[in-house]
Length: 255
Image 1: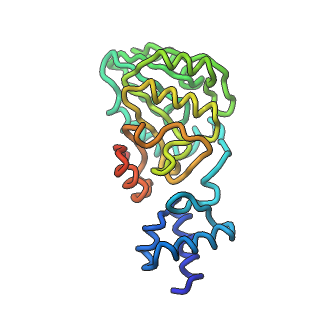
Image 2 (image 1 turned 60 degrees about the vertical axis):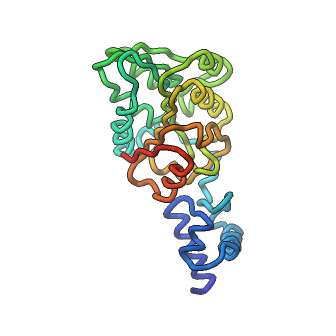
Image 3 (image 1 turned 135 degrees about the vertical axis):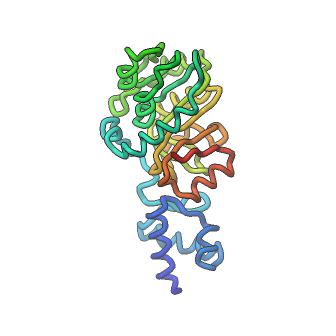
């Protein structure tokens, strides 16, 4: 295979998988890791991918762009419903407590919370608060703070201070990006700080994220892989990305 052909094939794999590792590419194409790194450098200069530690991601994977809650709520709904159904097995028992982060996947879980047990639910999400305000068996604690319009969540010093006084059985979080190297990330610093406080508040930490989030890295990391106990995702998840997370100690549940 000529270098140009290999580079085109590599670019296609990055687009399809979301993230590829240098070592995997070297094995697949029967070349050295140094050759792969040179290929990636050529492709990055051509604007076809972006190099990251240990591999490459699509050009748009390292992003400061945030989509609004309404837009996210209406996308990949089937996958999010499956993720929510699988996450029910991770809920605490009767009189248990949980944090529900703002986001479309956590909102899907709020939609299907069981009515056969008492649960204490803490959230910073305006839509989730409205959904659970009259839910049977739910004692709702709404976190105050500055509400970000794009995510419809409260963030900031007041929110984080309130979280610092809490200890819940499980924190359920959403994320914009997941990689074994960079951890769990989001574009906004204030959002990341609140998510970080939620991680600290949970005796167990569960991230709910559809497979499009795997292989993406955003500006601010809010949790290292060792901070998260379980990731619940859908069956579109790249096997290599799943294996890397499991090797790092994250239990991955594929819905």
